[in-house]
Length: 128
Image (cartoon, rainbow, N blue to C red; front, side, top):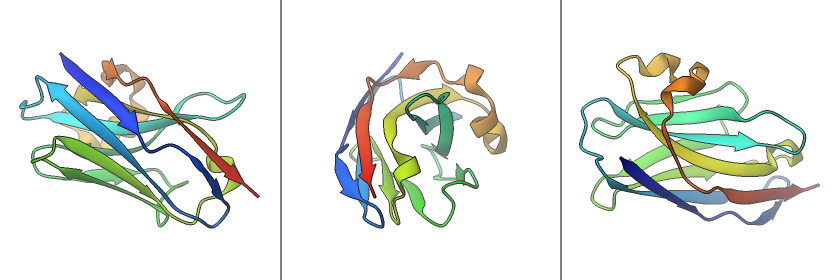
């Protein structure tokens, strides 16, 4: 089991930046373990936006955030970050981090079934 705790959610203006953190604990030393950031906007379905392998840092992002959001990890701190720049009002929502295992990371953002451990979420609000 992996436990996850998100932090860093806040309110920002359009064009601004925020950094989210996801602290992981428990059984995190698995070879194919990934952590992914997901979001759910008002009236929208939850979507994955970025994911990263904890062992080697290979990462993936959706087209909607590419060039604006960066996912990274600090293994000494067991923490995964989501740096969000050039924020837009449509980035508003609850952001969750989740953990799961897969050998095909390139498909992780299209496989909601692979994410088995979830944090409680952190609210991001972007004002225009």
